[in-house]
Image (cartoon, rainbow over all chains, first blue to last red; front, side, top):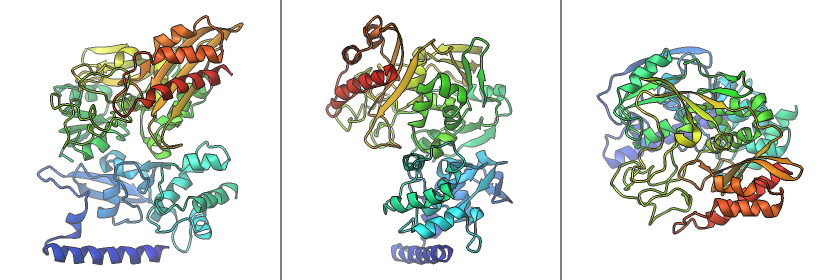
Length: 195
Length: 332
């Protein structure tokens, strides 16, 4: 899964660079980021973040969300940007063990907290049981929502939900999968819950 | 998103002082407190909210749910929606509140959203959220695009010719049925506002939504002791089964004695310009037998003054059935 992600991102970078050249040559991937600060002139802010156990000191525009910090500044691109408005769940990460939408969280607000992303959950040689279950049950198609689904699902295990499939569906309703892999996502989560 | 300066408030007094520098605490406020951020950051990304200063209040000591000496509940403004919904006291004595909270948003958003923030949740009217469109709530005097436009999801109660935006909250509907009081600390000290007086009707100033003044900080929500023998229920009807705003919802509290209803509270969501208490429905219930016919009469009474727009007339019948079914569930 990880190598596939890398390949996909590499391809996107190439594609974005190609488009830029077509448009006029000055189109950088940084400027293409919808979230990057579009307006300048405001002071930067020193921000300390603890992500996957590692401390990071950054100088950021106060407007920078946790999502953009992870992707654009810490290059942890496993966390995805879907809607950027808290409606799709692709950006789900853990803050102090609880799942949140990183797109609606300012980096400045979560200083001092323990932030966990998909990269901190497991790695290709030591997959988290939920990652393994998603693989076994084919809980994705395009894979874009997958890291958010897995982060949401692992946090949900610690929340007071009932044991039924209906409970899983309700608990996971904040994670949209436009490929419609819900059936297999449900099977993956059910497997880990009952293991 | 417009630029802003960011600071973290060390105590409530610091937050209040910072907030008091603004000219308004309503639409257009230059200073905003940020807690969960689920409404505010969203609206800042849309340039609907453009505060010059953001004050982080997440570290204020307002995150506890406490039993009061009188048997009520004192809920800190920073208690997250998920924690409040799963609180044992709330689940036992104020089930309608737990149900309302769990019917709102998603697991992620409920972990972020706070009690104080939810009281200040903004409308989902598409014109309010689009700065290219006229909207009296966002830009007073610019006109209401919704009255002749997309209004399927908007209000049928409490509207004016200037605004028909619906209040989207579930929590506030339950708090209205529970007769909560909002504890606010401001530059002139502390005051307690009954929830029925906290939200304003749009009238000709839809940009003013609450009684909040510059510097005002919601510190707590207080619930009176649970009504003896009462049962409560929250029913939410929407376009999909989960993660969707209400088209109509009802929070009801009901107690009966020997077949006759002796206590009734009815509040509606999704249909009002503010969380909508219905004294008309309550009057139609008191002293009557807890039957389907009584519930239907109460629902009729609740919606008697409803005014449909071009697309949302269906909400009137939907809300009636919602009220009747919520009451039947609470009485069962």
